[in-house]
Length: 451
Image 1 (tube, rainbow, N blue to C red):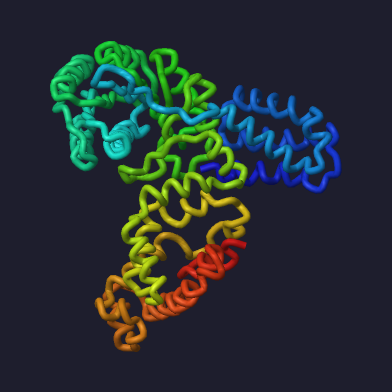
Image 2: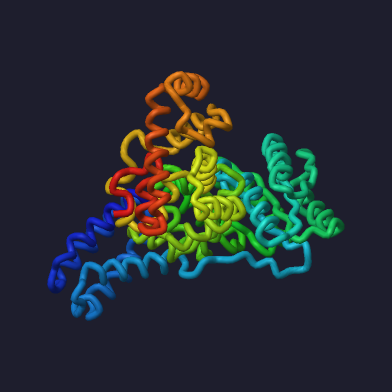
């Protein structure tokens, strides 16, 4: 998401670099580029107008004209206006209520309400130590009820059994009563959706809202729907007292317009963003961090938080002790590092959070992606425990066996072994050369990474 927008905004700022001072014409040209970039990203026209007016008011003032680095100052102004459009501070859930605190999920069919309900449940269970119950008020799609029940089991939440013949409002009321009896902290009610906004759906949504009296009413919207997302947001905001937005499928080929539009349209903040299919792929939406990523400044804070949450600290400490004692890295260690990289969303997701000057120019080179990482893991899995500990014993016949077992060619095995040897050398120098040199030596890491 935001790739094209980032590129276009970068081009607009680049035109101002090198200018000793800015004139009205310079700024107007840059604003024209910014306007086109936002419109191409499918940002709602009223939002674009408000944004451009805000940037113009500051850019035409002394703040930029007196600056010795007008290009950088212009970027700072665009950054602060992006943050303002997206809601300023990160939104948080308000669960201060007599248990159970009810969260109602609303949105169009296919927006990701059911999976988002489960993701949110997992987040509340694991991070906030809440006892959570999931209930489906979607009486039109029995498959949705079954899906939510399965997801509840996967994330460790309780599930309220639903009869499709029961009115949605009664299901919500019964679920709330059952949650109260079972001392549940948070009840998440998943509601029905339609392919488009209609009066019947809105009437039912209002009835469910009245029945369960939620403290949070979250509008779930697909980031890839563009202007349709804005129209749906307007309709739901008019019918329900929304308290926040959940933006889903942000890891797909979305232009980002929904993220910049729905906050102003609904008047409510984007609280969470879905960044993958896994049940833990739900992040808090931080406007300032997102704005930094859009402008190529990276989001190192989120990356550090992700590492702290997802990297196994015991395994990392064991590896560190092993290296400190002078014991070399083996293939089992490499497999663990590659697996953790995939757990963090893959290399693309990691690079997306790094500042633009640390990522390889033009993104990852052709042929290098998470599939290659999985291929490397498969090769290591085809080795015997002894081969993983002592890769030097892998001769031609062993290479052929490993290649056949992992479904690759012998040259792929050779390539991994060569990269592994390089990585061993880098790890020995890591204490002197630091993180940048170590990252440049990782297997398959593109040349120029970290420059």
